[in-house]
Amino acid sequence: MPSCSVVRTLRLAALAVAISLLAACASAGGARPATSLDTLYGELDQASKGYETALQQSREGDQQASRLTLTRTLDRLKQASARCGSTPGCDPQRFFSVFDHLLRLKDGDFGGGQDLDSDVDPAQAALATGSTGAASLPQAQRSVTLLHGQKLSQLIAMNGPVKAALEMWLTQWRPQLMDAWVNYQYLRYQMWPQYQKADLPEALLFGIMAKESGGKVHAVSRSGASGPLQFMYATGMRFGLGSDSGFDLRFDPAASARANAEYINEQLRAFNDNLELALGAYNGGEGRMRRTVGDDTSVSFYDPRIYDQLSQETRDYVPAVLAAAWLFQHPDSYNLRFPRVDGAPGTVTLKRPASLSELTVCLGSAGGMGDGWFRTLRNLNPRLDPQVTQPVGTLLQLPKLLEKAYASRCVEGPWPILAADLHHAVVPMVAAPVAAPPPERASRRYRVRRGDTLISIVRKLHCSSVQEVAEANELTHHRLSIGQTLKLPVCR
Image 1: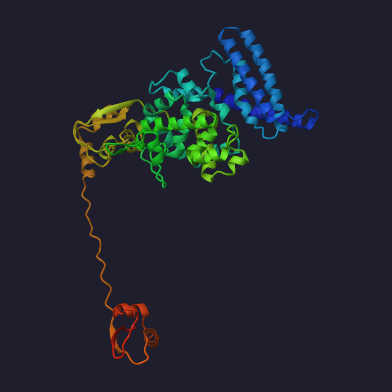
Image 2: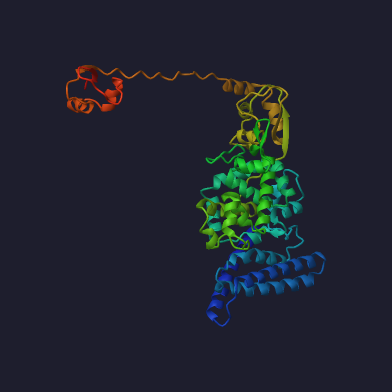
């Protein structure tokens, strides 16, 4: 029996064909007057409101009214979709998420355990919340999907650049995406509350982090941007990411997430909640973006007047972040399976001196972590040098699932002894070879005659340069006197 996600995928595939056929019919008829893009998307908004009305009617128990509202809304949405193909700039995929909601509700799925007011796959929301207990499922879904009251699915247009970025994340960038997912699950309890307080979607936080650093807390770019969310020094200082007892707060996951949320909200206010422009400002600089956009904050990021003036890095950055956020919400729709990660936070107090590197060795692959725990231990203890041995009594942050593994593997027995032996191995210091001085060049003597000049002497002997002879004889302004003896290099 096919899964719900497969059924939804088949529905959307059939829907795509239906929209294409309807659009072809509409464009072939020729009798209907041209529809503006704003009008068409306005009808999409009305259809979305119809869906909300039907959802509320269903919750109140008036199933008959809910079905009637859904039927009318579907008809309206079909008519709008049919005109999409003949409307310049219209993207049919903007209709897909609304269709999916309506069809699932119309088929009677509401009340079966799904929160249809969310754009998140239920399995994905469970992965995001089940392990840490940070929030109940409906709360987490709302937080994940909303941006200042707007559904993220309505803000992410599936245009060419976003589709291309989706393909990159699913192919060439896939290792970075999976690493970012795992790293984020262990950092989530520090970073997500900062976004939650700022009323920003978790998917957006993940998208930015996946693109910026892959979840590596100590990442530093060639331009000097640092931390999991890659703040430049000046921008970091503006949002409170200075120095704390010599530690650069750009490397602190919670502090950087707070600063990032403040920055994104600042840019959303400047660009009238236009998410793509706000992300463009985060990557390319808010000053440049504001000069490019001017007063028309409703303009699309992909409008040639904007898009063509941006750097290639920013053109790639914005759709890449949106695509990663979309995959965070809808992995099943793209044949993507994120691993289940228990990111519940824990602590241990060292019972014997150890560095993070030594703990990585003695923990091995505990908890099924085939790649080892070095990255996670570094991420959770960003103030510590991983090579420096910490004294007994030091409190370390680590995943809760490692607390028992630490007690059984890293306090007594062979593994901590092996780890210490490897860590304190003495590497011979090889002195750098001393460069031998260049061999002194053989020389001969020459007595200056009447009519000689330094240039004529050098030309006659073909064996040196004016500068070399002048320096060897400490001549000032190349002045010579008759009878003077010059030292000249001998040609080999």
